[in-house]
Length: 209
Image (cartoon, rainbow, N blue to C red; front, side, top):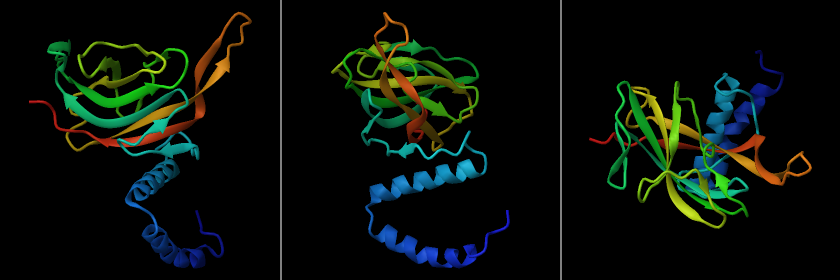
């Protein structure tokens, strides 16, 4: 696309402004701005489904609220066999590996919150959600009660070789709002936004030996 009149002149003034802006921000703010820029560039070249200005970048280990849960997304690991509490919770499968993402969640709502779709793994072909488990003992947990906090492992099966140590993965967390159900006898339900989400990137750690 041809540049519009005046674009080149404006571009020549931009570097100095960017330099001043970076000098006034802390490192954590640089990270957010950098991820936002990556998202914008990806959208421009077709890497995202749509150009969407409602993404809120947050860093690994940084708290993010989706309305129902307050959470941190901490780290990711790739393993051949999924173990927890001294037992196997996911057996080795030829041609597949397990991607585990560790996150800490607190349910700030007044009803149990389902965990199945809380973390949305993006950009990994042929991934299959496997389950959510307590980190402390490997027990499965489909929902988190109100006021409770748990350190959890969200697990996916991914094709062997699709990810390796040092690969970057993108996790979306869709914002939620408590809505009255349409049926007259129904109560309220936490529903995902269609447009608003938080997004973070994690570097995959080394596979287990």
